[in-house]
Image (cartoon, rainbow, N blue to C red):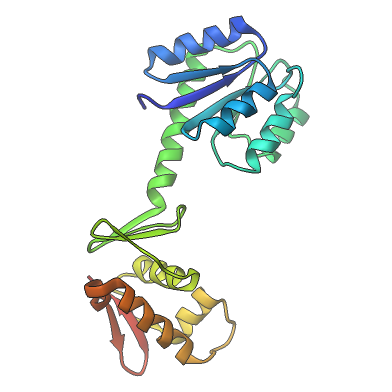
Length: 224
């Protein structure tokens, strides 16, 4: 987890220093903000922040407001710090998309351990969004496809179709099944819709288009 960038937001400078010292020892790079407005300025300027440690009670803009605004733009993990430990506050935090809720006073070592656990979980989720098959790399979160390192422009449905194929490698998929999962039809629609998209997808994949095999009278199978 070295070199991960963490933003620590707290109006108490002693608290920020304490948290920063412990995080820095573990190899993290720490940014500091003394209030919510300063935190949002840093958040908008720096796109590489991996996690935010956010105090609830702050001047100018409190932690709840900061959390709401961040969640409008990002899924970056957030740990909320509060002097209050009421269940109502915790529920509010989780409803806003807070990943962890820690009451003051707390053990800095426990905080660092929580930071590590959340970052590992976030990294695993990011990895799960990336699928690879025979030189094709598909990133669901970024909505990108690369073939042997070169980007390929796919339409939304072509992207969904390729995703479904890669998720079901080696499995024979009927047109009805593809229609239900990719087009969300509850009935068997026009098979030409699928055939047309498969033809376009094959063309865009170039040589890799051969991975999409036609099963006559049934549908398709993706096989490397």
